[in-house]
Image (cartoon, rainbow over all chains, first blue to last red; front, side):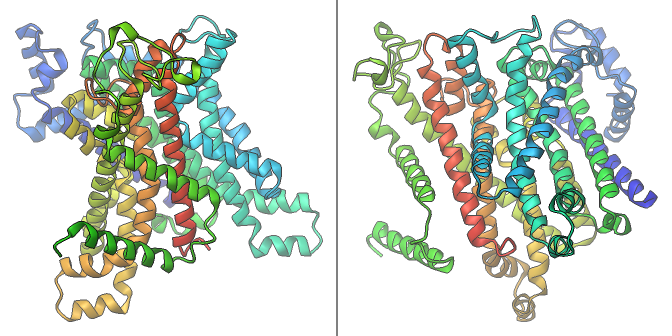
Length: 311
Length: 299
């Protein structure tokens, strides 16, 4: 088990090194980082100070290591718009984003998994068909269209809910519903197929043939085995949740990290973009590592063959 | 060989027939799949003949007829789907947008497949350190939401159509790479690959002429599954105002600009939203169906 966790940690570390390298390379390729980060009209002495601070007068490989040092000490430059430290600018938006993504994620799990399990247990029933239609719709209707349809129905036509802003908890309902639906549909689809695959296995037949009541078969044998692929999908869904937040926050003018990212890209406020990308990437790598370790806990087979675990 | 169109049409037809006969009879094709195929053929026809069939130029303004209603809401037949805030015909813009979005999706899907398959083959051929490097890249791009990476690149490099298509081309490359590597490694175990190798074929010939055709069906399925994702990605980025820039127009772009008029003129946004959704739905239905048909590991 220790070996398994260590190998996951190593992979996470490699991923983080690659993310930082990616940002470094993109930043260097796009021009002089000093003017890019500080803005072209920054005072020359500020640019000189920045060059010195980041060692831009040094050879590239020294700059590369200096960049790592800067990233890990949290010195990512200042926002072009108000000159504040970007880490502070981004961090103050995080609670807003979490107030959408955490409830949406809970909805994904609380709706998606039971729906998928139920659909698999009652294959070809009415509920199964409804779940499948919902699942396919959830994939084909992109979040920004779903968001605008919800606004059209609940804000424009019915006038029940506000369409934008962050004045009260009512504002959060439509964005959470948008993100909750898409993820729940995806999760229901995967849970259903994972369950169906498990239910077709011979150990399920054995368990029910030896006289175990069906609920116990489902609970003890089917669910636990179907959990393994489902956990992997939940790991992938986190990425979808982040991407969804970018779009949904923009539609509903919700002042979170995603909206900040879009506005900063449009204004080319590169220090902020860089900080957000690094932060999202590290969160994702950490989340994937947790999922991998969970996977190892749930699936005892994984512990023995940690090195051959690549799909 | 003089009449190139007819000869290519017949080879296309026979290829298609062989393709279909190889994967079972066509008369059991579900009605939903037939509808999906018809819709996609319609979209392709619209994309190919966009200049001929659009009633107006997509940038042509008619300032006296701004925000006029579509026919089904009581508007006039002069503008079947109504007009937008500048009096531009929504139907004409929709037709041009369909062409733009499909062009981007085709281009990006092909770029992604070429990059992914090439890297997958390189990993399978050289193994060792190079394979580990490719796999690390695969892990890296699977770890970060592509939308965020794309936004970062657009922020640093600015936007142009060519860059945008190439950027979307990197979507899903890691899936092709993973598939191509896995299948190439198992393909190399087979007798035919060893025989071709013993006969002195170059790696180019081995991979291009022998292994690639053998894994083509799996790759085609992956491409049909990635295609709607690229349509959705492109429309999402364009919706955010970071993809296709005016005066060019794409489906997501239309939805994005229609958002301003959601309460007064919802038809500007509903028409492209409908096309995006139905097209993505049809391609993914088709992809799922093809996968069930072609992928032997599923049955």
